[in-house]
Amino acid sequence: MLGFFRCVRSATRFSQVPRFPLITQRAFEKGTKISECGFHTTSPRAAIPPVVLIILRPALRVVAFFAGRNFRKWWRSLPKDKREHYWSRIKEKKWKILVGGAVTSAMAYWFYMSHLEVEPITGRERFSIVSTKQIQDLSQLEFQAICTEYASRIEPIKHPYYARMKRVADRLLHANKHLPQIYTKTWTITVLDDPRNMNAFVLPNGNIFVFTGMLDFCTTDDELGVVLGHEISHCLLGHAAENVSREHLLEAIKLVLIALAWAFLPSDILSLLGYGVGAGAVNATLRYPYSRNLENEADQVGIHLAAKACFDVRAALAFWDKMDIIHELDLLASQEWLSTHPSHKTRVAKIEEQLPDAISFRKYCKVRSILKDC
Image 1 (spheres, rainbow, N blue to C red):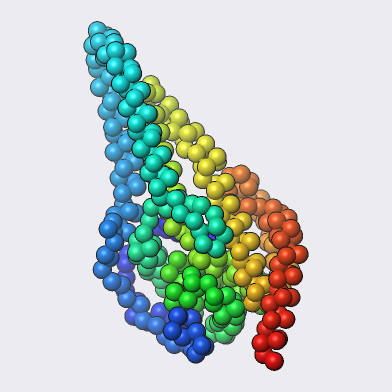
Image 2: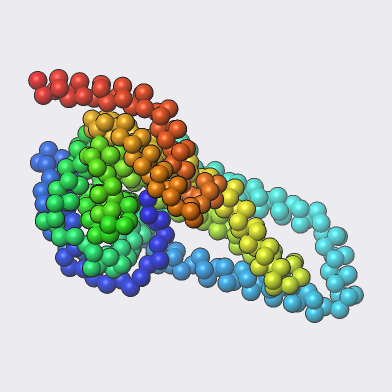
């Protein structure tokens, strides 16, 4: 899936962006139709506007940097007796400082626990501090940025790729329409012309984007159904909101690291090095493993979405085997522990474990479909 926090470029207005409207709550039984949707923006009404959220992160890093660096300069400028005086005052009030730290930690723990929610599809507990409105506004900014970046590469709706995408997407969405997360969104498709880009992603508001490279790479509808099932799962599971919420926590940790590094390390070079090591450790131990878990969860749910739509889920193995071959030819490919995504070999192994249940579920859904038609 494309990173949800992209670099948002100029917010130009697109009056005619080719998209397929798919399923809405009121149009489930009427099927889908092809039309050309106009794109427009509305004034953000979130408590914290999305642009503020995007700008706030680098601004806070600058504040933490100057706060830490100015503290170091101030401390060095003090005479020796002043430093000893401050140290003695700290020792005198150490219990008050410890109590204050404990109270602050308890409040942080309470804040975290009070913002836990249960994901309705998997039943997993997760931390969330972002409202649905904020995510929708961020999605609109993301959609706008993508349209700006690929303005000259958006395929017209009469292109044959749209018919294929519509067929596969409709099949997935109709088969799983019992999920409220599906029928409360307006699903659309946009095809982007880039034969070298084997990627597809779904924004939280239901905008499906797929590159022609991915459509060419998926030689069968079964492969495309598995890929699209994975990307739709990210949307249904609310992974974008979860990532944004978790990034706020990790950003708070990094802000503390910035302030401490520039306050207590003796030089700017050592401070920069110390922060780099600390931030790298945070990414390797907290950010990347969590992101890989979300990818595995989307794989698992996506396989079942595809199975319910009666796609041959064994195509997932064929797809990831092909991706693994391409990955091995890439000499600059990163190691799994330094990546936000599991390795292709890991994915194949996990999918092989899930396939027996998914195949049985597919057979069950296929029999029910036949009996319903009868």
